[in-house]
Image (cartoon, rainbow, N blue to C red):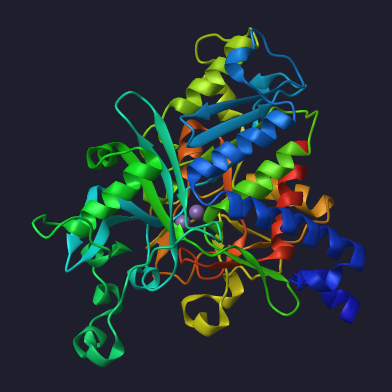
Length: 464
Ligand code: MN
Ligand code: MN
């Protein structure tokens, strides 16, 4: 009887129960590398420069350095240092389509406003404008670091990274003491801290004699000038991002999880990138997208709505000496894609927002979303059942643990990824990523088991 039941029922076991010590060691080793990468790459620019270094070490070259391309060639296109596309040219004719895995390397954060610096009551501050969907109260009273670039009018680029090194100072946004927060505590959570109050505390020592005004700001500008060679007007052409100054770490007595900032979506970006780096020859051309601006709608020339990606594929067709009218459309229409973005992991403390039968669980493997969207699947790229079966087949024959889930209960909320953008070009696309707790917070949680299953999934998909 039990055998018959097992044959008919779908099984969703906890992944840790199915592995031996050797496999556990592999998972932990892989995640040690991931944690160390995450601590070097907290922003989109840092992710791309780290990834570019690793890719070049693995024999990847800028596509512009090739006159012609052939099977086995490893290429990349670095899009303004903020997004990147990489590929291994396959043995098969590219007309039969490519195998694409796409993730994003930007994460929710606080950006500095164009005119950020001001002084009030003998404190100096930077004003910010938040980027992506955050719960604003989570970004007060934590150590923050400043990452990014300042570009001078002569083109000189100054790279800023302060608050990560043990000897660096950190920065923070203050919050009201509970003793005087009677009115604040009555507010709705979303209004408790206003966007205009997310001002970063950056200094308090005045400089100069009594006659001078804004002496604290003056002192900060003197320090910035000494350290970076800039004056206030140079901040107009900067992109400075505030991110948590704490490091990603192993989580739990059993060290089974990773806690870290920016895992949406750097956990999928890293595991897919690492999978690509482990491959040399592929049947179908393997393409890895590391996109930017997903958290604010994929707009702009480094986001996936941009034609820059089409340009990269067109250049590939040109250099394969087989481009002709409409070939790009044909290649897209025959392509297959995994949109690798994180999924909302089931959190028992907040169980009421999830449908237990259709939720992604930490430790149960890669989480596939047939569709995303909200309010009656609105805005969803709903993968075709035929394609879901094709993906399932790869996972099952490679003994990879997977779950097919939805992001939350019907009508509770929803979300989106870059899936629809590639689907619009004609590719078969499915969302497929790692379940996460505390998504978009300064400290997100993943399971090491799922991270490694994702790596195996991406490798198997490109090896198909
Ligand atoms: Mn995401
Ligand atoms: Mn997100």
